[in-house]
Image (tube, rainbow, N blue to C red; front, top):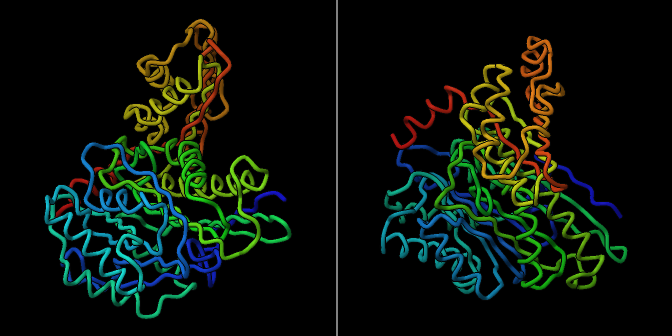
Length: 410
């Protein structure tokens, strides 16, 4: 059976609570101390002990919750994930580590499990102390009546500068049993993942061991979150966590089996959908563009070339202004480090071939400019040196992005 994907936002059980045996609750801690009554703490619970895996930021500055979750994941199992928005709990020293551990302990008391079975995540301003008494109270509030219909509410609680929540669901069938993979993510700025995006949480009611789960998660992240960029900045808090509780029943999805491949396809589909939602909701974004590179010497160089174009400030501003300045794309390719042959290179923007075989192609630039007015467009590049290909997803750079980030901490 083919994998089916849907966002299902607003459904009774959506996103991370769509799979069987998962519930969520929310609480308000007014983390930023602004008197807000908006939910900013989420608790995601598996009814039974689930196998678990995660990928984390490779930034050498790691937030305290990243350190705690990496430690807890050594057991390959978890019962819950506790998340707060508004404060990253990063660069906060020994107190920050103690606070992340207290979040795990408080959630464990609520869920009735061991603290080591709780994964912790935070997002928000770096370098500020956590308001732990309010956060602990909010965790207890979130645990009062967790429900499968709280998936969208949890996705909203983890937002910072996001303008909308991000959820996705995929389903596949094994031995007559339908399995579900569900996920939620947050991310809008500081997006240039080197593992995942800011925060993403994925659940499934399929049965799979921790080691193959971790391997499949790594592959899915490389094909999804690691292909996107909003602003070229990698966060201190990036994490993507997955829990598999086996609640749907059916056979264990052994590594290398057709059944495991179905699960892998569903996992990739959910992460790809979430990744695209993150870029589309980038801070100040008005346009999304995909860069497709082919003719590269190897896959790594193809990916490097594609990502260099998506992160070029000159390319991003040209796309925002509808300026068909294709020389900026070639210049980005030239500094990407990827091998390419200028006399065999081809470049198309928004369906118009603008450069081929070392020279410009005559074209009505006003038509290209009009095409650049679309909200979604494609840049295609042939490097002319091999057979490998890759793609990456980026967005325009706007004055609104500058406004948001010029006053983020104040």
